[in-house]
Each structure stands twice: as structure tokens, then as C-alpha cells.
Length: 214
Image 1 (cartoon, helix red, strand yellow):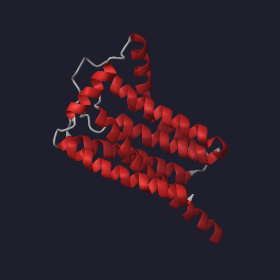
Image 2 (cartoon, rainbow, N blue to C red):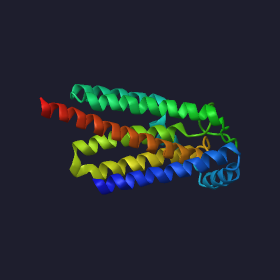
Image 3 (cartoon, rainbow, N blue to C red):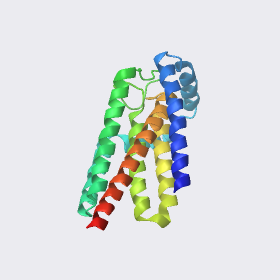
Image 4 (tube, rainbow, N blue to C red):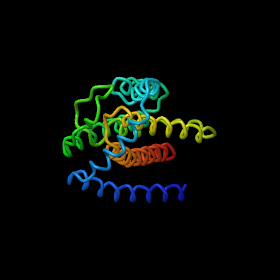
């Protein structure tokens, strides 16, 4: 566990450095040329079948779907008497929402207008709320499931990574986000997820310590 914690800490430091550079690039409007190149390359692969697939995938990051998943997860955790997990899940999701909206308002980066998107989006572009939110929500749920089913943890985390990545790719394919939006969303989401997982561990240890004292 110490090795894993060290790797996670190192990853967080690298991400923080990368984010500081990326934030500066976005503020100085230096990232748009690269973003445009990436989006135009992705757009070359569009076809009717992929259109339907990507629209379906992006729904897993839509507020309507996310709210239902959060509500069901919260209810299940309470039903299983896992109040600490339910509390931290709430903190994780609310924090992700605040971070996303706050950063969008601060950077006020316009969305791509390279072609007519398949789905309407009106808010600011940076960072991607779908990328940030999906990494926090599905990453946290994957962590809880991995604790519950340790023998399946590899498959659980693998599925979560594939789903989160697919949601990010769908945003690029649909032309509603720049590449740097997705990267920033994942980076901020990962940092917040690590904080929430650490909080969960501390709360769990505190609770177990109280039970032992009792």
C-alpha cells in the first residue's frame, strides 16, 4: 500500500505541474491551434454509426443520467448502513460540480464551432464537465466496488477506465469540447478523486478506531 500511495502522490504532483502550465496556456489563448488540429483529425472519422454510438456514450456523463446514478448509489449505501461512504460520495459529487462550474466561469473559454455539433451545448468549454464528473463519480464508485469485491478489482477499475475514457472521446467526436478541455477535466477530476478517497480512508480509520476503543 505504501508503494501505491507513493505512486499516487507522485502522479498528483505531476498533474499539478501539468495543470499549472495548461491553465497558463488557456489564459493566454495559446492552446487553440493545437486543439483545432486534434478536433479536425477526430472529425475525419465521423460516420452515422459512430454518431449514434458517441451520442449514447456521452449520455453517461449527462446531468440527467449522473443524478440518477448518484441517487441510486446514495440510497444503496444508506440501505447497507454505509453512511460514511454515502457522505463522502456526496462530498465528491458536490465538489466536482463546484470545481467544474467555478473553473468554467473563471476561464470563460468558448466551445468549438468547427462544425455543427450533434448535440446542443451552451455553457463554457473549459474544463469538460463530462470528463471531470465522470472520473470523480465512476472512479469513486469503482473504488467502493473494488473494496467490496477485491478479487474483481482489476476488472472493476478496467471497466471504469474504459467508460471514463469513452465519455471523454465522445465529447471530442461530437465537437462540443476541445482536447485541452478533456485533459483538464480528467486532471482536476483525478486530483479531487484522490482527495475524496483519502478522506474516505481517514473517516473509515477514525470510525474503526472508535469501535476498537469502545
